[in-house]
Length: 364
Image 1 (cartoon, rainbow, N blue to C red):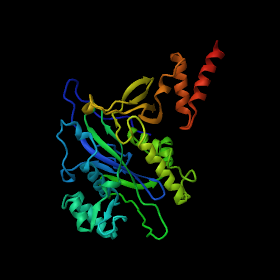
Image 2: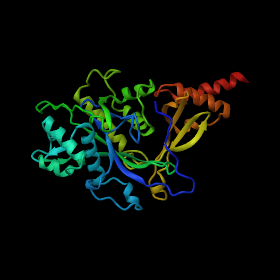
Image 3: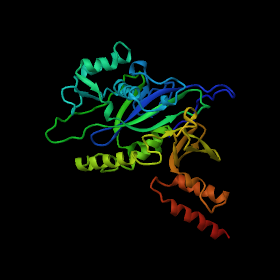
Image 4: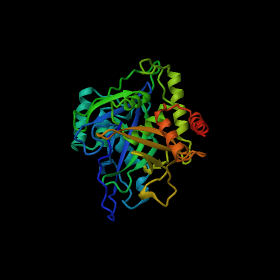
């Protein structure tokens, strides 16, 4: 579920607003669940939606290329530091290695962490300085780039968001068991913070119990194919070797593709309308990197199916070839798309196409 976009369009003929550098983390728990935070209702962006921890890149996070430099939209230390800082501010989970033992995450007393995240949020101390004063270093090396998203140029509030994967350590015999319990920031930007399997988050969106915007829905859909729980609700934890094999498979997937998912830049733009519904193409990289080698995903689309006067909608990730399947006329293609929107994510495309062609023969 997602609200119908209420974002203002840039005046026609005006210079598009710059895309503000930002970063987010798909934080994966020791049981391979994903952390989502619920934004406050009065938020200026993604109000009431469930999002990955992340936010704007601050000057203190590190230097960035000039605004007109295409390298501004590439992974670098500032984006990584900002992603880890925002994760700490918003969830209380500090992704920092101990200087004394690089194999371990830094452990802090609850009150110490609570005071630190608020001091950093209120800019009373630099994030990196505070972490170093506690004997740690931001664990930027363990972040895995997982797409960049550029807001389309016709939207008045734009972002250039670097997405990352980060895997919290699995539990192993002989190592101390650390509970990573996320907490909200007290209602400053978020009211809830929770780890759940990706498939559960998607089910909640399907049931209209939470709001997910296209980037979050899309990435959760990709991750859900690899990080699968042992039971539908994720109540039973999988063996450690299985959890590790799921992570390995996901990382192998991220390294593949044309371009690889770690280098992909996506600026979702309308491909076509089907009645009141909208199909978003994901192959375009965005205004700031047009003319470069950057590209998005040419194989998939996001279907946005609007429902009711309140503007809520249903999202579904599909294949680009589903939008214009060969051998169907306009009426048959529309019926085929409607069928695909009703099918579960695992629905077989060939079976749907076969049904559409069968319907044609029956009407002859």
